[in-house]
Figure 1: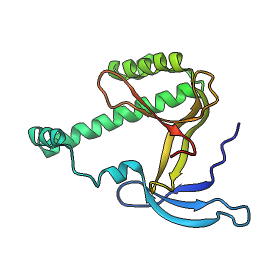
Figure 2: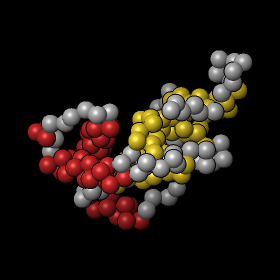
Figure 3: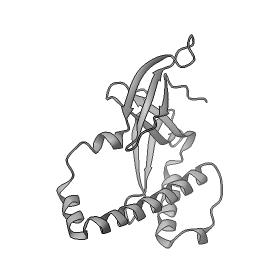
Figure 4: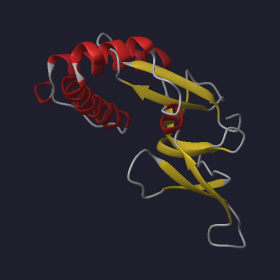
Length: 174
C-alpha cells in the first residue's frame, strides 16, 4: 500500500520553531496550489502559557541548569526515537550502545510493539491539517493488530519510566 497525501508538505527554513510550506497536490502543476506556511503542532503549542509546574521547576533549577537538562533530555529522546525507527525498519540494536535508561525505554517500546503489532505503512510521514492549520511529521503510519484502520502515531520518550505512545486520529480525520 502506498500513501498518497492530498498535500505536499516541506520543512520551511526558519530561525526558530518548525514551520512547513504546504501545497495542495495537483496533477497539472509540479506542486499545485500554494496554501502557505504553517506551524508544527509543537510550535503552535509554544504560543500557549507555560504550565505552572514547569515554570516552578525552571525557577527551582535556575535557567541555565533547566536548559542543560532540557538539552540532555532532548538528546536522549532523539537516540531512543532513532533506535525505535531502526527497529521498525527491521534493524537490530546493540544494547551496549545505549544507556540503561535508554535501553529500558526501547525495551518498553518492544513490549508495546508485541501487543499492538503495528504494520508500518510509512515512517516520518509529512501531514497537514487544513481544518486546524498546522503541519508536521508523524513518526509512524500503520495498521494495528491486523486492523484495516490506518493510524498516525507519534512515538515519545519523555517519561522517565516508559516510552509514551500517542496514537492520532485516522488519516483524513486530522
